Amino acid sequence: MFGSMKSGANAYAKVGIETGVMAASPHKLIVMLYDGALTAIRNAQAHMKSGNIPEKGSQISKAIQIIENGLRASLDREVGGQIAQGLDSLYEYMGHRLLMANLNNQPELLDEVHRLLSELRDAWNQIGNTPPAPVVANTAPVLASA
Image (cartoon, rainbow, N blue to C red):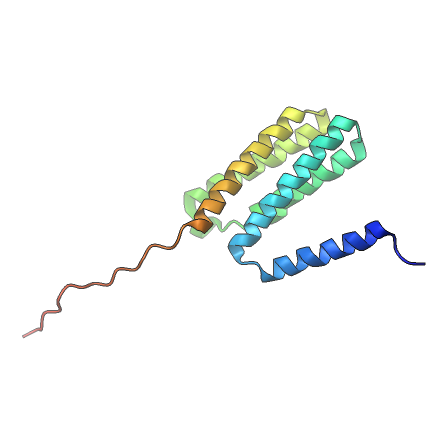
């Protein structure tokens, strides 16, 4: 008659996530993408270890989608210059490593990508915790023109 307790909890969690996304700053959205990819990789590691191949594949696919359609797609390669180009290459590399981890059941590749994403997430958080540099007004006296 009513949905299961699990489906109710999932619906509640989904509303919480959607509300968090709508209220998040662009910086926080990137952190949420990193968190989602890291969680998917941790889940994939657990499923790989337990031999649950379908769920392992599902979680690795989820991590790849977050990296490709979230993190990589959000790069502004024109404004971001070399940093954006470097991140683009790194995200492409991570997607390839995740695919290889899935195809060959290589947990060390999942560990590698998890480490890389964790380092990027930590750096991104540091950027968010750094207050913007103060704007210094030009205090030189203005000379009257003759």
